[in-house]
Image 1: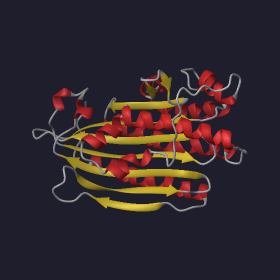
Image 2: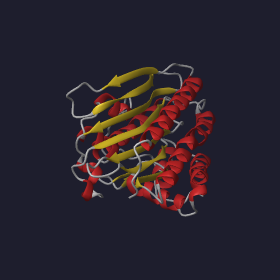
Image 3: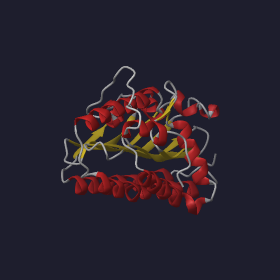
Length: 308
């Protein structure tokens, strides 16, 4: 777990601010609308100190809700969700920063997407900051298309290729393991890549990997959006989209470590929950009609499989 000098966290923060700006501008161009930009600062005396920028587009032509947030905060004590694999750092002050986004498209044929890149630094009193990284991206379609899943996974593989042939298979499996609704024995989507508590082999290489993942997001997602955004749909597809969004809510509230970390550490609730869809629904024991596109999502797409 390599240590880093005090200047390195700020270099990460500068990259993350630029990444958020680039993604938000691309969202506005694709949608034709404009994101609300909501800068915030933690008030003196709150558990966390720091600031951030929440950008969100609601009610757009393309995105019913698209949120992309940057935060950089410091706290007096690492929360349990951050130290379960690093007990030696329990109780240490910390700095956390990241960009996190979730886009909920209006058209049911355009998949939901999530991306997050982040750095966490423990700040022990007797030494230099100890930094590690996490993040990834994953795709959650309501209606599955093999070419979309293949393109997304190929983009993830290519982003990781400069850092070793082991990274994509390892992070792909990690994503499949992580984005599972354990209470339903069901995958959230078609996966992607995920990594956490990562510091291999050193700070500079880990930071380079983080940048490669962040920079790969738009080329991985926007071509899929353009293929699907004008597909016609009706009430049936809309109802199924809202049902699948309900599953998305379940995962984020019950299982997501990032959500838990933010809430446990006293983060800004509105920004933490920008991943929630504007509308969702639940139905008791909904069973798609056999042979339907809805049934195919369960049998062919939200299962663990090798896409490449």
